[in-house]
Image 1 (cartoon, rainbow, N blue to C red):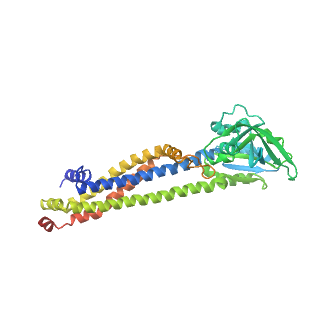
Image 2: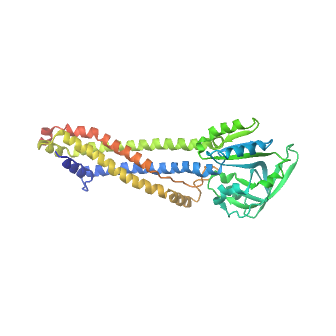
Image 3: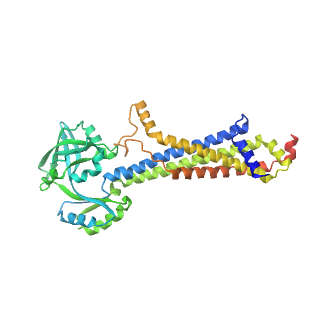
Length: 401
């Protein structure tokens, strides 16, 4: 039997538009495979989006490596000069940290003030509302969620209380809210930025820490750089990296992504098992036609090849449909989430619980190619048992009945 005839028979059985059992079972197999692939790709795209936003949005605002001290700040200045000569360092900037109590009427909230120079606001510029045109010593930037929680609006004055070193005297600091930071991440709950001069005047008498924030070209090299920077500084200085504060979150996202991928891969295995059961029923439904082909001179190898081709075609058609449907679901996932929030009347994601306040999506062709390849391979493998069963049908007994 020529290959053209084998393909013709396989195509007829797979894409038969008729109402017979074989046509129905083939369509069920294709739909099951397509739905499994679409579900896997759409969920993978969302998990990829969480990973990307964690890496590009949150970590772009956080120091990759941070050095702080309450002692002599001169080693920090020397460290900045040294790091600026290394091509693996994207930037290094000084800052001042101060623990404070935010007072607004009868409301009191703990806050960590970060004093920055005007140039250090560049990473935040696109996320500020309204745009910062002037960075003054009395200026204040708060995360959008924190400002909303405290019922603050741009232009309001806020008083911060900074404790003295002996904890018996407190220094008040009045600042005006100049902008809010709306990143859509958990940083909106904690960010409080002030002009470095606002804390500089209080540094002599309060528990203020000076530091250096280091941004790396490779965020995953933070652990190595933390060790190398620690060797350059006196032992009393504290050196940390982003893994100490957000490493667990990143690992949780990675673990969730891997576990969901494994679960959805099992769904594809179930869809492949559906191909086995469907093709076994096709063998039963087409046993007379198989017997006639063999009686007319067809070899049993030809029958085996036809069912292998049918399994492969089910995988190919299901994979193509699944990739298209999965991409469509992934692209529209943020809009679907917004519609669901409007219907429920409550947000699905909040930054006080989740790292992001929106559903991120990152579609990758590698995921689509890998998933489609696995699905096609499993479909061909699933055709093994039905193909062998069809090739072993007794011709005389089948034709006799």
